[in-house]
Length: 444
Image (cartoon, rainbow, N blue to C red; front, top):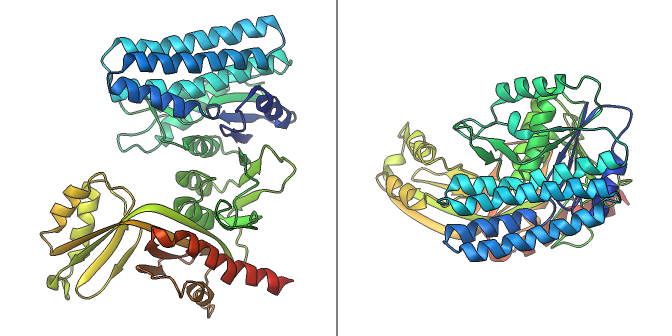
């Protein structure tokens, strides 16, 4: 069985939904994971924000706008009146569920219900389209099998068992359609896997059914070696290892949800990144295969906060770092980079939600300094320990940029640099010129 996930731009219009249908295989079972149509989730977020502020009239206006958009989608998508009637019934039901949230006290649970409606719309409308074109399909409700634990991690056992039960109901079916992003939480409330979570859904589902392949279809022809919004003449990378792709996704490559690699890697399922606008393009294949001692790509992660703890008590004090890490564990705040000296430890985080509380807790260890508006620039490849000069070209290309921190050796797959965000574009362009262009000239 194959998993095919299509993002919001891939199903962003009636025309795009038709193109997606043409990409589906007919000779093997496939589970299609769909995002909401492009722009829908942002619109639903705005509705939730207005309700949270008590602006019911504005929320109603936004809801009416979105409903009219979907009525037009129905008109454009279907040819048969029976299909249009079914589509309009779906739209009516979904928007009634949204408006039901207007009639009760707004809460985070209400917001999650509203945000779920985009995927519920796209999957139902897509299934009706398949039916109109004579293609049998089964709609698998994600809320029946996708669940997260109290720690907001996928409940793997629940997902595997309940997805199996759903599939066993349809032993002869070839095409299954399900929602990305949405799930239930430990309280059985409607919840989600955060923005971009449809990739994560595809990987979790792929792991649960031991899929032969997971395909992530977007509007970009694979993962590029640099940020094409900043750097000219970037190119898609044909092959990446799981570890390389995970580093790139975590450190800023927007094409892939950071958590989506692990479930596939655990079950050794290849992941392919493909372009619905250019389906013939090779894209990027992510697998356990190692592709040699190469520098593959660079990514950048903004919104980084640096924290430095200075304390003479660090000197030869075992347990000091453990105590520091326990502070971040207590406030569920991951650490990105860390460097140490005899009297100080510097680290970075990308979530400042609990920064005041973290700062207060750390001050019992020593002086705490906070810096913001920083960016991590991460260079990814296969940096073998016995390969001399692996990092030299990268560091040399950044010799004119002040580097706040350097992390090298924690992984054979990345070298990370912390810089002021004002130097981000310069850093990406300089690495491109100093590493990738020189590599191209050498290969030529």
